Amino acid sequence: MRTIMLVGIVIGMVFGNQNKNGFYRTASDFPASGDGECGGHGRHVCDTAGVVHSERLTQKLHALEVSGPRHHCAASGRSFQFGVVTTKSISIGGSGARATAKEVQTFTEQVFNSWGVGHRDCNDGLLLFFAIEDRKNHLKTGLLARSILTDNHIVDILVSVKPELRAKKYEEALLKVVDRVINEALRHGRPPTFYWVDSWLLGAPHFCVSNPAFSFLFLLVALSVLHVWRKDRLQAARRASFEGKLKRLQKARDLLSKRGDCREAPCPICLEDLPPSLGFEEGRVEQGCELLRCGHVFHQPCINHWLRNKPQCPVCRADRPEINKEFPGGEETKADASSQQAAEPDSYFWFAARQNLLADFQEVPGVGRVRHGNWGEYSAFDSGED
Image 1 (cartoon, one colour):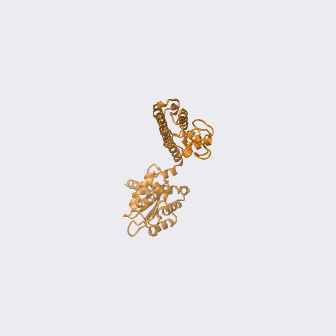
Image 2 (cartoon, helix red, strand yellow):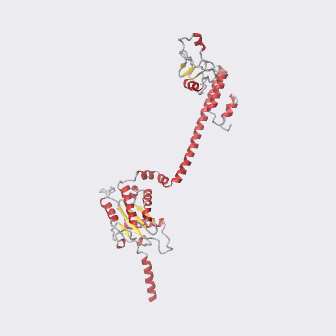
Image 3 (cartoon, one colour):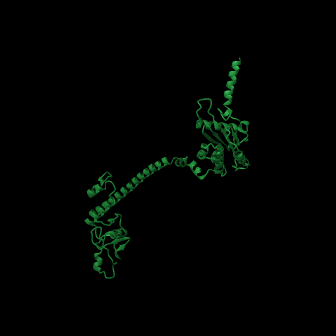
């Protein structure tokens, strides 16, 4: 009988000691807010790990609830309730392995609910939990508090106290977390701009900042895809422009050969349409087009750019073909004026126009086939390699 009683006493001592000196197996064994096991720091701080040695933390949390920023959840306006809990470990009685992050999170949530942190109708509570020997921490927020203090903001705040934790300055770490939570979020009643944007973008900005190497690689891939897409779009636009100009040139040539109508002959340089019924009766420039001495007509910007680089007519290669004096009038005779009329497109015109077109679009796949093909073989043009 004495042996049985002795065994019972030993078992009771073993399992009883599991809930002392900062070691707790479950949240249900954890002391209530303000209990004697909490170190006598009041109802806001329960320091079972024995790492809080002053009243600074208690004073900050009390001041937050009494005179801190109001969130106006209720008609009278209320402030947030913020609690702090420390333990040495919540993983005992087994292999001695450290508690996992999930176990610490669950333990914190259970203590948060059992303590009833925050006003029930506002859900404005926060609970900071440090498991010292497990080297884990967690900050639980109620629904209202979470709208102001986002999850990624919490992650950054907890990461910022790693130097203090490595140096075993646990009270300083607790004070730093509390100060940052109050000053960066609760005092303003909204998340900082970065975390507000981050919450709307589903955490993408925070992920990029937290993973610079991956973000840089992702940016390179995105830029490469964008470059390929843009290149394809530009190539498609260039191809469509080439096809349109080639068709316009062929149509004008067909009209001239079948009906003797040269009014749709384009500018030999840019292959865009010229205004109809150009007479040049009042001078060498009319409706934005210019007539050369050789009789060939161009858009004035096109021929001006051409002659600055090469002082020859693009069609017949006549040297210095500009008409320097307007007619009629001056020293120009009627014979000269009559000779300076727009010439009908000839073989030189069509050849020059086609060569200019092919030179302008030489990077478009398939242009080489048109270069060596006949005028009537436009249907053979495709985007295959030359």
